Length: 468
Image (cartoon, rainbow, N blue to C red; front, side):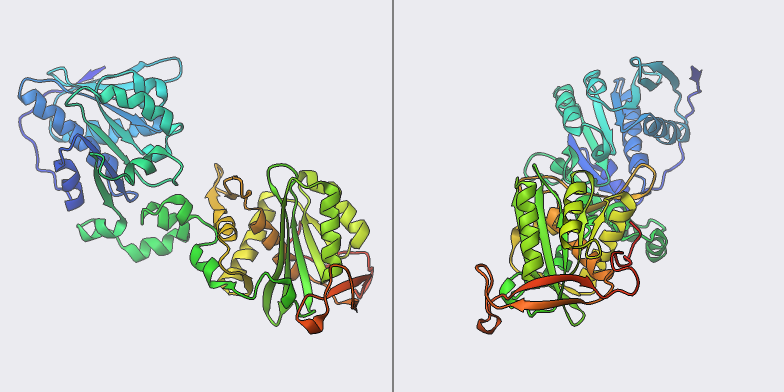
């Protein structure tokens, strides 16, 4: 425990306009998004200190609690916020550090008039532990944000208690998003992106920062305050729409050119998807997308065999992860190991597949069916996140429409096209119960001969764009 003397002098503190707007807003409930390193915790703890000092000058007491995402953040809010302001204003205080429970330590300062400010990590138990004014710091990143909210809100139900919520965005799956995007609910909302902060006087070189970031997703979320699932969507709606075409996805428009197939394996909740693309010049036209849910492996084998008969398939890439081992082995035995390649969905392989796929969309080298909202949502569902070690990873929410299964099938097909080795001899079959005559404008069906014209061992798969 330490004690610091009270002094009368207090130097003037210069605030930027966006900081002044936040501090001077006395609404009972207020919430804000600030760009990174724009002083959101500094500004919010300043309001807390000013509120306590104002109360003490009137012979009153204030009680504030800061709930942070972790102990380190709670310590920073106390040391680099609360104590910094108190020292700058030459206000006396005592500081304590005590156990809150077996795993949480409480950091506390007490002013001469018994006003107290406490900082500690947020969880449902700590949120229930006080009847006080509350600051939720970086609330979008709190674990169990909804449980914390349910535990917390009754705490500040007493008339006159204030609630402040600050954060940068972190997707739409948390309570911060709901609070920040609500309307007509009594909340005062503030939003300061990097452009507004600089316009209000913050000395930052925006272009230098953007170039230095080297990551558009990071820039969009941390500095432009875009929600994570929009900022980190691997394929934006703009990219998806740019590659749509009314003639894509219709088997009857197959011209007999070389085709490549991607297969994403699914047997229970996820979809089994076959994506067929035909190369026409330097563009890959989607000819057919087969998506089935809860189909047996026998049915999957049959669907894939029919695709090999219907199209001139040069190469197919299949998801070999987990339950995909046997389907890949069966497909290689039936269609040739030089035409069927299994791909393990390891983190590096998924990054390679996703990068190859995104480049095809950015360069408009793929055509996909137009106006298919389910397909659009599937392609937009895949997100890139940064893992605990800093390595990128790809995630997608699972729902009744799948788990970005169509997207991975498309990327596998594009990967198959990137690693072809040579032509396949084929001959058209003019009639078939499910085939059509090319002269009528409907889809021909092809019987494939297994011989590949590779130099060397014809049983070896062609060299892929990546090492799997």
